Length: 67
Figure 1 (cartoon, one colour):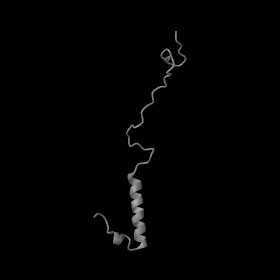
Figure 2 (cartoon, one colour):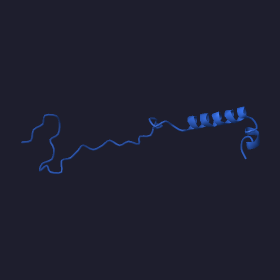
Figure 3 (cartoon, helix red, strand yellow):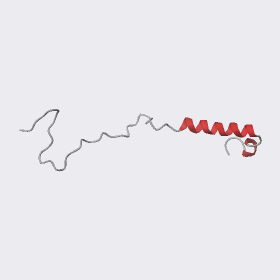
Figure 4 (tube, helix red, strand yellow):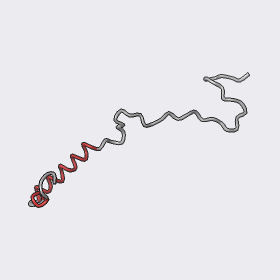
């Protein structure tokens, strides 16, 4: 359908190697790496851990004391 016919690609060993290498380069260039997000924010900030056994709301800020 698209590209060369299979019988011409695999007519020689070198053509088959070039075709396979071109497919690997194509896949390498199209698939993003794991650390690239493409500008989209997919990770959400985790909420602060809340103690389920606490009687009062947690104090705000560093070194804050409750009255």
